[in-house]
Image 1 (cartoon, rainbow over the protein chains, first blue to last red):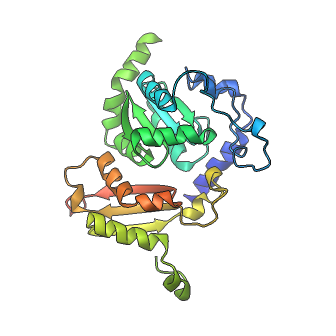
Image 2 (image 1 turned 120 degrees about the vertical axis):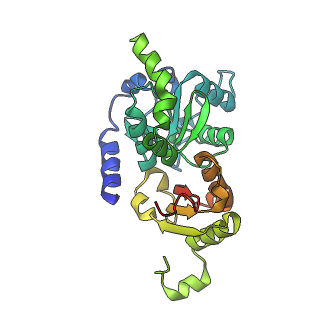
Image 3 (image 1 turned 45 degrees about the horizontal axis):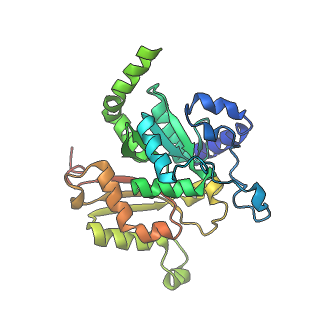
Length: 172
Length: 106
């Protein structure tokens, strides 16, 4: 287990230079993410001048963070709030959630909560769930990685994603 | 569990032992296995500012209170019992939550 986690971390690091545009194929509609680097070291750096700190990416859109979360889970059949991005998860649990969901070949939308502490808090408040990743399917809060893995193993996940997968085939 | 140096244990209860007490009290756990796996996440991006340890745990809990509850609800019950710990640096839990019947002889 320890080894697999370190492999994941290493993989994450080596992938961190992947062009940002690549994530647009994974998170359609979540364009706010695409211009951002995956690095999570900036927000905690005391030397960073305010001008260079991440700002509220949603400012000016007229939407509160709660609205953003509501819209995310409504408009994206499978919505994942995770640490890192699907290509490069920053945490073993987030990585597990991505791997499980990827097995079903459904469109996967994701936001990186490490990039935005306020969004992170908004998601926690919305779901009243304290940890990440958090998975929503068709607007319904599903749970974290333990639960998604469990649902994968007992067949519930297949059932839940059935019509999403079917729609996907139709549109292709 | 219980392998920590004798003197320090008396001074300050570990998070693991606080979790044990809270889960036992709130959920009347009939079996409880708490494993500190924080070391596996030491280089974790979100853990850079947290050197205190005791952030990640694997938890196996058997409680009659899980009877008739969905998995999400069971996890919520565990999180509710550990709300204080989650506020004070407990970062992630891997939870296996079963009823006594589910763990019974197969």
